[in-house]
Image (cartoon, rainbow, N blue to C red; front, side):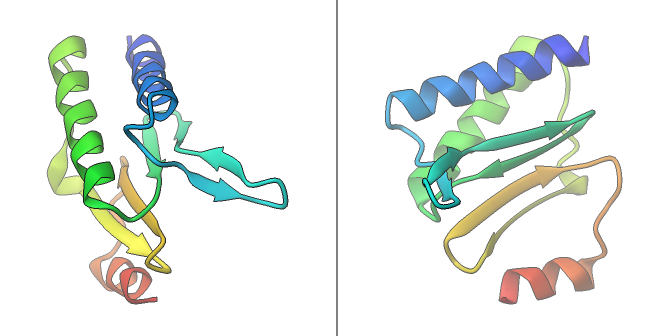
Length: 107
C-alpha cells in the first residue's frame, strides 16, 4: 500500500515540476533537477527556497493524505533550509535531534 501511495506522490511532484509550479534544486555539473528522494517510508523534498514551493509542498502533502488515506506524522516532520537555497521538508521514522536540525538550518 505504501509503495502505491509513494508512487502517486512522485507522480504529483513530476506534474508540478513539469507545469512550473515547483522549482527543483539543480545538482551537479549538468544541473540535473532534483525535487524528491524516497527510501522506504522516508521522503525528502528539494527545491528553491520560495514561498511558492512551500505552498506547493503543503498542497501536495494534503492531497496525498486525502487520496491515500494515510496520515503524515507532522510532529516527526521538519521544514528547513540548508545554505538558504535548498529548502528541505522531510518526514522520517526516526526523529532528528533538535540540536542537529537547528545547526543545519543555521548553516
